[in-house]
Length: 222
Image (cartoon, rainbow, N blue to C red; front, top):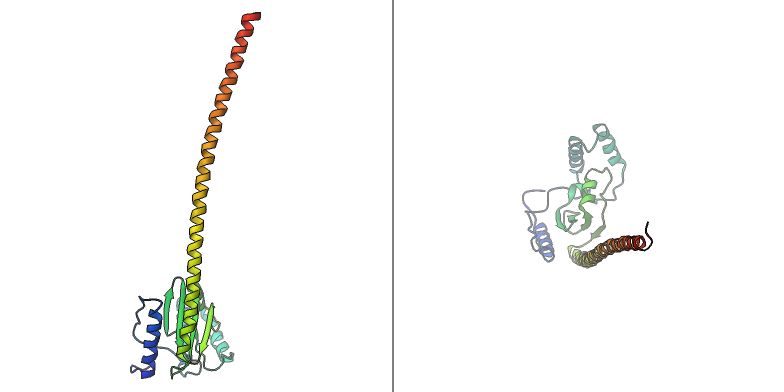
């Protein structure tokens, strides 16, 4: 992507940044879209893909002997038009809890966008996978940026519901733990009383037997 950014790109950036800040007020847009590719039809894609695979080899995530095989597989795979490779081309990523949400431009006119929701672990797994796209909890492609707004609202409504359920479960767990501790203390107290009563009973029994023996000796002799 050139140093000069188009009006369409700036408008898309400002729109997305404002949209995200509705849900994540601390979000700060860092510059522009992350430089990258707009799809597999991009002439720069093979070089970027090769660079990415070589980085996986350097980090030990991909065996060097498999490098040519993976590239050959790319040539034989139908990626479905100009859809971008999510591992190379995420433009804007922000985090909510342990989820990552990505918004990516799919064309140079900034009309088609994709939105993806992943867990951090799925994203990390996808980085070292040779498959087309890392695992997603949700993946949407829209023909206009404004369509992202209701999708994002729906996603955060789901997050809100999950977080409320988590808080409610946490309250239940704490109440159950408190009640359990109460009964544990009661049972412990009851056991202590049972032990005390046992020793008192044993002492009384021994005393009765001893006195019985003394009385028998006094009355009948040995």
